[in-house]
Image 1 (tube, one colour):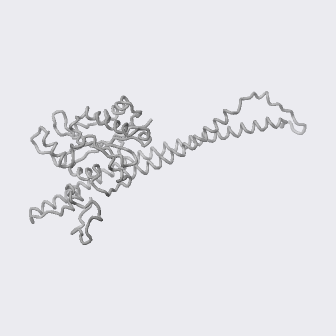
Image 2 (cartoon, helix red, strand yellow):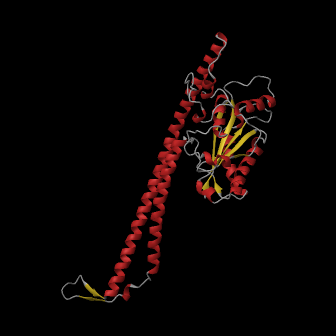
Image 3 (spheres, one colour):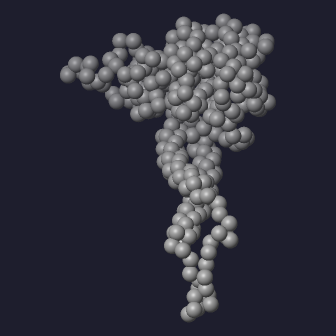
Length: 361
């Protein structure tokens, strides 16, 4: 049985531009080499039409529906994005229609718990090795007050991990809950892919050993059990420790001993490999926690740098009446990309150059 993948990340206003470009595949060039742009046309949004531009459209939805008259804090969490998936073997056994039903069922669960209209996007990516869904939920409570801490508190997250697998099972999907661990965090994409490749190799080795072990079991089964009394033996005249047996009996005993040794050897090897796999998983969990801490520090650094760029832009606008170039703001994730911006370097004219390279965050 496969495991459910259900991970959540908190998104603030400054995060939405860059993430929107990624989720909606607004560029042809991606840092994630696992994306096959030729298959990006297969992607779909289960709530298509609600959000065309993440930052502006989600901010508009919040302002239209919030009950508080106070302005939304600049550092407020505007969206809790959930990534829903499973392993590649799970999807290999599903048709395209069943895959869509899997994500629709998961979305239906979140709609019941957190509000259908609060799901502003539910983009399914089929252009990577494993299908998955990016689902963005505005954390409105029952009174339409924006609060990620209240809506997605520890109890709510625990309920999702416990209830969603059961909900999917009730709708016909053979899937179970992931590993329960309070400090569990998500790996970065490169680390996750490296871990997945290591586990894939280990799984193949384990399958090879299991095949050899099964072959040894069959050979043991083909050897009919025999009573020791059936083996005729005679003592030798030269040594009391040696006996004479028929060649057929000797050959049979040798075959049984050889198969038994192979069986025992493969069993011991399989146990060692299982122990090795368990050790690898423990190491991954430890590394996972360390990576999460590093990611938090990097996110704080990005937020700080974005704040500096924003402050410089405002200062220049006040003093000189001209802000930073649009390219700078787009790269810093502070502005939606221009619709007329060339998608590929080849589309630029030979004489056209950036006036300033600008920061790249």
